[in-house]
Length: 86
Image (spheres, rainbow, N blue to C red):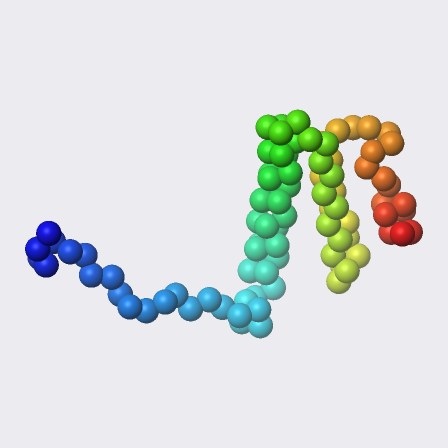
């Protein structure tokens, strides 16, 4: 290939915003996307690999729990009280 057909790429990197530069709305949106992505991966593990999957997320700043479970079983996974009590 001659030099006329080569694509020149810029030599700069994208600058990512640090945590302090992001607005509250941006952080909440990113947190929501990551939670959805994690739950989607858990669903895929349960569906395609035939696993029983439980994911529990806890936000200590807000005191909120989020949970995904692949099987509706009364004995599994343990309840929030059992998990927090450990």
